[in-house]
Image 1 (cartoon, rainbow, N blue to C red):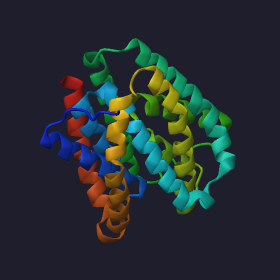
Image 2 (cartoon, helix red, strand yellow):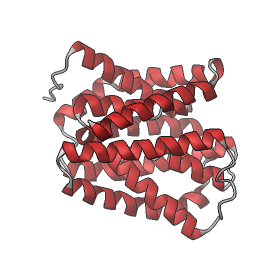
Image 3 (cartoon, rainbow, N blue to C red):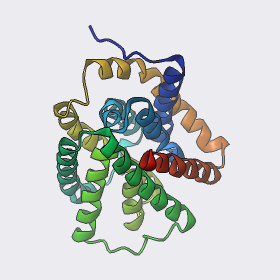
Image 4 (tube, rainbow, N blue to C red):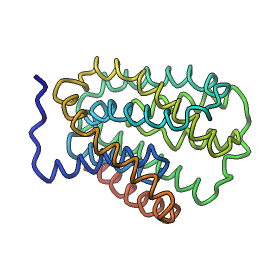
Length: 251
């Protein structure tokens, strides 16, 4: 029998909110992207939360692929997937060595801070990376970085966004390619997270309970994309994320 973790009512409210945030993000409202990472990191600890979130991300990825599967550009994914898989392996080795949350907490904080700055730079100057070369070394560099950050912090979204911007993908191809990429990468990460002890009976039970909020989040996310000025909303959330990331760094 799978047993749920023992959480307070406030913690339950937070994790339900975090699960809904996963769904909102997968629906294309990207400004929520780091909120669920921080919520689960503060409730369960940064290291343990990476594995706990992973099955929920796979659920969201499957739903995103169902919606956007026909828009994927497999020619670009073939360049990105090998270095990204290698980056995941490197990230898993780091997590194997860094088992103390007091050490992993600032590492995750700095990663989220760097990704937040990257996302803010992209918002301020959308064409900042548009002139990057369409070369194999560029794809390998971005793939390695994406694999490493997604294993350590489930936070490769901004890197993939910048890569797809640099190669000039149209909007729907960007979303479709990203949906397939993250489904493949997150599925690839599952055995590593299990071997690291980050996925178990208690976490899987919580994952099952939080599937409905993910689905609700996807519905809400589709509504938000039409009802809310995303640029302003994203900017506010990213500033709050930066503050929370600094708290992870300095405890």
